[in-house]
Image 1: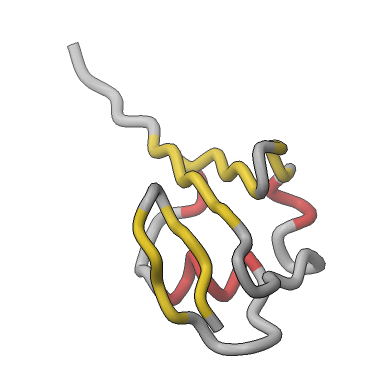
Image 2 (image 1 turned 180 degrees about the vertical axis):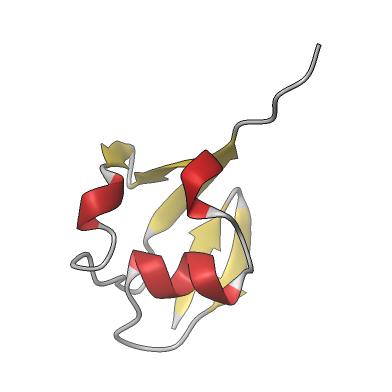
Length: 66
């Protein structure tokens, strides 16, 4: 199925959840905020939220520095 991630269309496996998506991209979940269809999804819900065709996701990563 096709979803939009940070403005780009990507194919993902049917019935994937947010946690699987983040893991598949080798991202560290501790430094991320994820918005699904313009709503922030709490990290504790990522395992339970199944992605659907045409979902829009924004992944925001926090980076420390000075």
